[in-house]
Amino acid sequence: MNRKTVYERVSFEGVGIHSGERSRILIHPAEPGDGIKFYIRGVEIPASFEYVSNTVMSTDLEREGVTVKTVEHLLAVFHLLGISDAIVEFLEGFEVPIMDGSGYEFYIALKDNIVDTGVYIEPISLRGYVKVGEPGNYIEAHPSVSFEVTYKGSINHIDCGDIFTYSGGDPEEIVRARTFCYLEDVNTILERGYGKGGSTRNVLIIGKEGIHSDEGLRYPDEPLRHKVFDLIGDLYLLGAPIRGRIVSYNGGHSLNFELIRNIVKSLPAVKLL
Ligand code: ZN
Image (cartoon, rainbow, N blue to C red; front, side, top):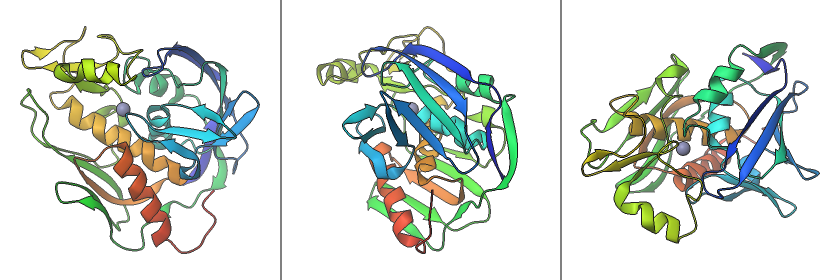
């Protein structure tokens, strides 16, 4: 596959789901080989596992004391569209706007705004089986020539099965799936200082009586699809598309990050970025 960048600059604005602060980002084209980079208050932060500073509730990056928060949905869309080189400049705020809770708005704005640079990018191929976590809460990565991501885990209150697999088909299978939480956890999340920008407009809130959001389920198994979407975003911190079969059992951002570190350890010493 070839390296791709964006054709025209595109901007997004909205609220950060955890900080509650307004943010405005501008995505610029970049040169082949530059990779995905965040540019904020004069600091350049590569979208790399090496800069991960937090994986609780979101995946955040930090360099020289400057943080960019909640990068996973935008990175998932870049990964799904094969955009390998772009600069994400923060004009305001420091958290990627949550938009409608999914990657759909990023996807729609970017999918027809891509340039194939003609420069080859070598996908990251797993050399062996990698497993992280513990019984009941783990992720396995198997070598494969294809790209396949599965999430397995039960979702409370709604009957949506317990497994979803994305096999590299139409990204619309997952890009519209929104961030979710359980109604009974909302107060705890807010007390801990998270979710300040969350609302019924950008979070799928699941309670005993059903969905407490402005819009009903977009897919019957929307939460499972969002977990796959998040994992695809986190995996892009490897710096290149991955080839392999990944199966997450109740995983989240922290375990995703542990998987990435272990995948890197399992690879021959090559330059990843
Ligand atoms: Zn998410």
